[in-house]
Image 1 (tube, rainbow, N blue to C red):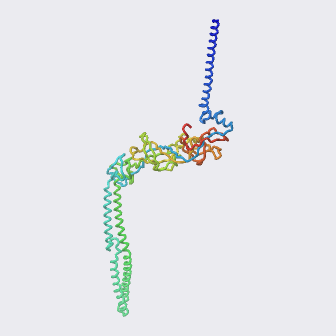
Image 2 (cartoon, helix red, strand yellow):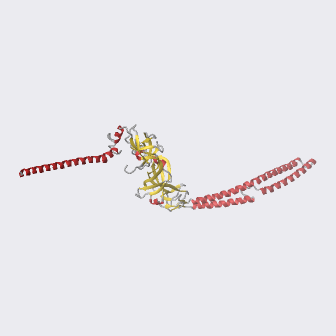
Image 3 (cartoon, one colour):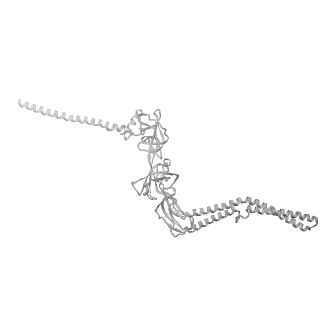
Length: 484
């Protein structure tokens, strides 16, 4: 009996142990199943569901993606929109070029010997500074001769005023008046003589020959009186002109003196403007055979001659601030200001004549470098920059124009792109627009869109023609919230 009980107890214990062992095994399996289910749910919630509704994922645009499912269910696709409005744009444009100046020629006017040269290439000179001196011996002699001519002209004027001019002897009214008075007295005497001879001839006291001789004397006296009166009238009228001629002779001589004095100034060769002596073309002891031949080349002024792409012509204006970066001064930009814009486009950095086009820039064909010239005035800080140094200039362009979020632009090529526009009835359509500046968050629209129109910012990539849309969010600005 006791043995049987012990046997039963042993079997019961073994059976109980087996039950406990089986229960524990099933519990682990159950827990594994539950854990797997929870992990799957977590995976769906944390990974699959966000990817399914995230427009940036590949799953979103697949056949099993959210848009495909929504489209098959006949429901509108969710989109986000923004309102086109004006915004400020900023960008930098760059143009290559060199440090330049105006080459001025200092001419040597007198034909004379070079006495001394006072400057050398590289010297900094001021305006009107003497660069060289010429031998002025002959010029001084000519000046003294001109002064003597003035004295002679003044003496002649005095003689005209006194009535004793050596050259204009016929214009002496006082002397002509005396001659006229004497001739008039002579004609009275001749007239009296003729009268007496005629009375004597009538009595037969004198011959006809004697009478004719006296009448001839009277005729000659009459001629002399008429000539004296004419000479008197001419002398009285011409004396004013004689004085004017003499006065003009004095003035002409004085002008000749001034001419010689002014000519003498040219014997000092002076700088036409402030600058740097670039070249010296004459030496002491040489004779200048050609009047006006250049003696010096002065580099006047200093600026940076930059060449910008023709597409930026309308954006560059005089007075804009600029930065000049020279190869000789890396990391040290020089400030400057746009002082001149040349409205001529040329092929200074290439062109058809070089047979070397630039790389394509979006037009589908090789493009030539068509540039325009802009002069950038440098500040005194750039005094260390030498003429001819190469580099590039940068100009910051700021302007306000119509803008849309960057994400609203579907594609862009050669300055144009497509956007999706939403009307008042929430119907959408693709539209081609002209694009300007493209920034990280916004795009400049030059044409094709009006302020206040609605554009799709997100959700337009999977839209197909005829798809209804549902506006989920409106962007108040062009900066999307973090994480979008």
